[in-house]
Amino acid sequence: MDCLSPTTIRRLRRLPQQPESVWEGDRLALNAEVLNPASSPGQPPDPQRADCFVWVDESQQLVRSIDAVMAGDGPTAFVQSLLKAMEEPLGWPDEPTDPQRPSRIVVRDRELHFLLRGMLRELDICVEYQPDLPLVDELLPGLRELMGMADDISERLYTILAEKAYELWQIAPWKRLLDSEILSVETKALGITSPLYVSVIGRLGLEQGLVIYRSLNSLTAFREAVTQPGRNPEQLQAAFANQDCLFLNYEPKVETPFVRRPRLVTRPNWDDIDLDFGSISPGEGMRSRLDLTELSVLYGALESILRFWNSHREKFSQGNFPPCRSRYKIAIPTALHPIDNMEPLLITVKTQPVLARAFAPVG
Image (cartoon, rainbow, N blue to C red; front, side, top):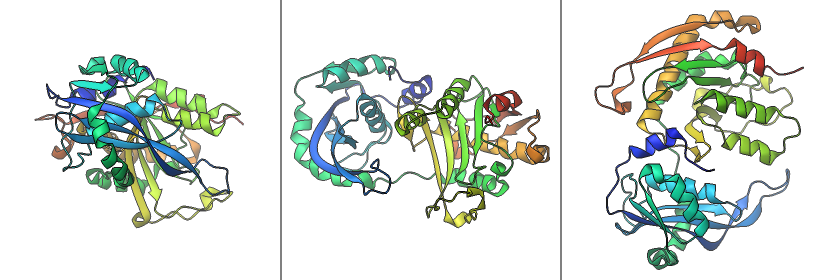
């Protein structure tokens, strides 16, 4: 990972920046143990040593982020921890503080110094090397205690999107569309300069949802990566982590047992479903907290797809995926507006038969 994506940079630049804000960042060996879920199938998870990444706000004398990491986690996880400290500050030992960008960051690892200095330049954040981090060292005993609280932060559920998610669940487009039958969503608002590409997942019955790729390159790269023969689990995991997308997943509260014919599994009731909204990008991995612009994009995409499906659903019977196009004016709820006096979005939804043929399963 050499740089943050333009989408991430635009989002972070909207955070306020305090002129005198200085953060110390470090990796701490706490000698804690966590269960490693990547152990062999059928075997109990193995305990492995976990350290933590910590970001301490020197000006406010508080911990903005603390994240458990496995021994092998590297610079990418450190950057993800920093972005979390900006957008989802912990605020320990006091109450949670407001999201913000620091003016200056101090680290005592040369590799991280060089990495962050290049990555954060467009965010107007100065990165310095310093062999001693007095505030981190002073707080270390308390941080050891805090580590026991790190996993208790629950993911946010965006209730304003739940109504649209329920409507999509009711029409279940995955009953007629394959994940290779791509829809494009186009608008010239909210900083979007190229079409979004939507893959509807769930035809096989294992899981349902939408993946909204921010570019055709990201969609194509992911599909090429996961369809190559002989890919091992680590390579597949890397392919998922390198997507650039928003997503909505419907996750059963009770795990569905494995069966050879998944479409025969009884569809769960709505009350037995958890909603999972979020973002994935190469620079910051998976993120469950979305800003107002991302929430507006996701809402607009859901509403336009719902209208498109109501207009064209009969055309997708018997495996057909013909050219279709419709344009809609979508009013975004006021609570999601990233700017004042936001106008409704003009959104065009199209089928992409050429992509569908290119992505169609072989054999």
